[in-house]
Length: 235
Image (cartoon, rainbow, N blue to C red; front, side):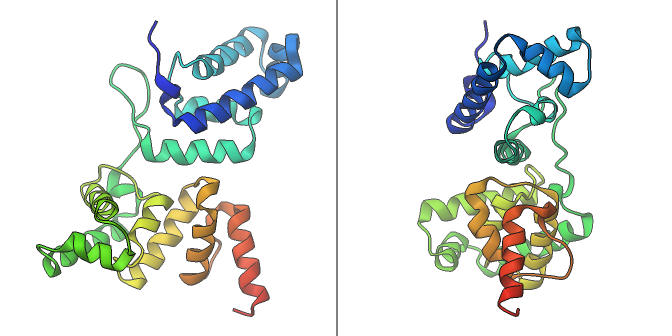
């Protein structure tokens, strides 16, 4: 039997999923299938199919896909669901013949207009620092050479549409784009992608520093806190 290590997730995320699933099983014991029926409003046969898909992920017999995550949202905590979605949006891609849908990376997940502006600024950055862009990133970000190379790799991957510009990558780009473009990209990414709880403080900070008019971040609690703080400070 093929084993998919951590179901295609990080060890920490998979362990959290295992803990929550086992808690669910203990809570419902012999009535879990019935519980799934009630939540999903389906028959027993379909409920058993749902259970098998969830169990396969927990036992590393299959990878977690976006569709399976959507199906299990009602059975796991909101925080874990958001963390899993954030991870999949950045790392999941379909494999030929598996029936999985590959994440659309057109325009790196941005609008065409934002993406073309991003490409122009990256080209200008390369032209300005043709032989020292990593050193420039180190200076701007105050990071190590290894970290700067990772950021530059992300910049290039976005440029050629190999990945989507998720909130984690937005944070990596801070200071390397014009304030105007970074502000618009931030607003777009925070409205279209979830992020793990570990990024909440950075999202709070960026939301305040580069705030624009309009709602941000799908009503995430962290963004609400940031906006409330801004109002309290009279900003």
